[in-house]
Image 1 (cartoon, rainbow, N blue to C red):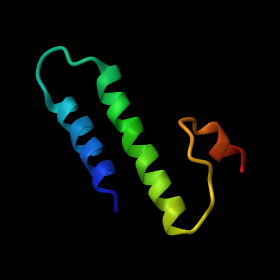
Image 2: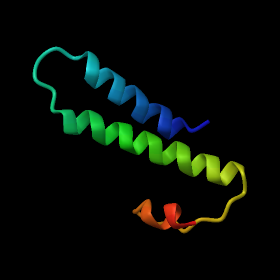
Image 3: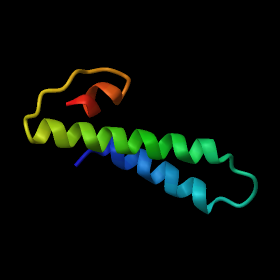
Image 4: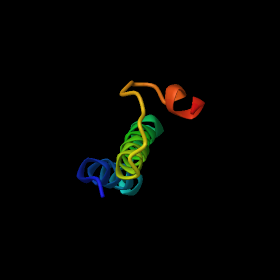
Length: 62
């Protein structure tokens, strides 16, 4: 659905499989980006208007 979302999902999954001390915040960051991109793709696909902003609060208010 979203090539960019898929790329972020792969990065998050890869981070989980790495041996050693991988900061959780790095994995969480890519998981968050993936979720945001899939959410945006779903809104666009369903033709739901939403503000293009860097905060999810605007979207959740609707």
